Every structure is written in C-alpha cells, then in structure tokens.
Image (cartoon, rainbow, N blue to C red; front, top):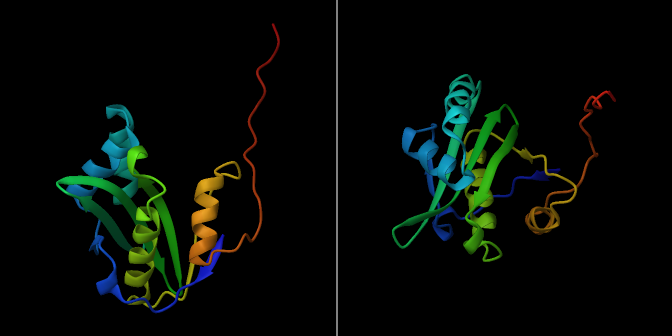
Length: 150
C-alpha cells in the first residue's frame, strides 16, 4: 500500500518520535510484540544494519507504552514497519497517530510517498491505512514448500 505524505501538524500528534532506533524503543517494541529472547538477538542485528534514516515512534498512555512504529526513509520514500498497538488499546486511533507521526517526521527528511505491507486478512489494519490515505498497489504471497508425505 502507498500514500502521499501530506503536511501534518506535528503538534496535534502525541507520539514520541526519535531519529534513530534506541534500545528503549526496541525494548518497548519487543515487549508489545511478545518477541522471544532468541528472536530479539537476531532482530536487533537486522535493525542495526538498516540503511537509510530510521525514525521510531512510541505512544505512551499514562505510564504505559501502548504503541510503537518504525519508519525508514530512503530518498522520496518512507517505509512504515513494525506498527503495533497493545491489544487492549486497539481501535482507539493510536495506530493512526503512530503512522501519521512517522510520516510527518519522514517528510522532514524529504519523503513524499509512504509505503507498507499488510497481510490481506488483517482487515482492521487495512481499514486504518485506507483512512490515512493508503491505496492498495498490488498483492503478494509467500511460497512455502509443502511437507513431503512419508
């Protein structure tokens, strides 16, 4: 899905935005994702090799981090990744806030178009992204090798 990045008033948004992947952001993201310790080691290695400007957003409600997101800017494009909202806080506009915060920050680095991938069966996420202005560009699928019969 892609969307044109519109100028947004960053003061209207409540996310904390950082221009790097911090350990604090990673810890909050992995907690929300319920990532296993073994996977965290690999994920941190992958994140440390990102080329392009990384932007992280965190949304705090009370004293609790309830949403996180990652954006990588390369030229005119901003890729949104790892958008997650705690299950008990979904359907309240927090995912929209994370996405718009990331897109607003990306525009300051020259991004004009945002893109993301979403699983076709994730209807709630697709609805959110469409409300923000994302349009479906194409569908993709993963191929897996079928197990052989004994």
